[in-house]
Image 1 (cartoon, one colour):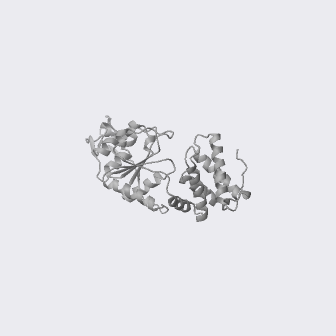
Image 2 (cartoon, rainbow, N blue to C red):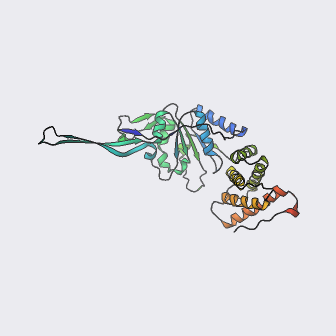
Length: 319
């Protein structure tokens, strides 16, 4: 007997999704790959909008979405399905009062998991951070993406040994670079079956629009924040380059604290130091954090006060 999990999402366009020319170009290229019959792999550092863009692309495809998050503990059965419990049927016959007749029948209960459901009904598979799963767990995807056939386990309780993948099935993958902690190297055969789009930081106009939209700060404040983050990124002195996520964090916190950078530069410097030192130093090295804090202090001073050396502000060091 086969049951199915209710794991389907109905994607809808995100009202605050920013579509600049840069984003529209990414979108049009990805949609062309889908129409040609190829899965799309969005690869890039943390904070570059991979998952948000993937959800947006899924809404454009117009099919229900099956969302899977990569996990070290995943096995093939986590994607395909497995036996979860059983059903017992018991018949007690007391037609003759002096004779007790019983009959029992036990049937294992098979439950299709998310990948099987997506292939069967033509849903969109969104496999977020798929390289966090061990490579052997993803081997089932090879025949699905290439031959459009899915090998079915014997214990499924069906006469079908293979499942033909629905023609409307699409797959979107996201991943971080291999040097990130907890990321496995994906097998070459799987990468060869998908089209990889490498995402980097957005252009200036896109970062400005996203920062303003996500936080509701003024255009002036958004420009100040984006300029500082981009200058820190371009300095090349960070362990990990800051992304749009850092801009959003600073802007949202600034909105909550209800002040403008020009009103309280000292407070703004400390705010930027806390967030950007955290985002750019994953290992927690004190040396790296202090270096980033010093650079941030200089960048904020330059952005707020320009060349007025006599007005430069040096914040109290944060221990």
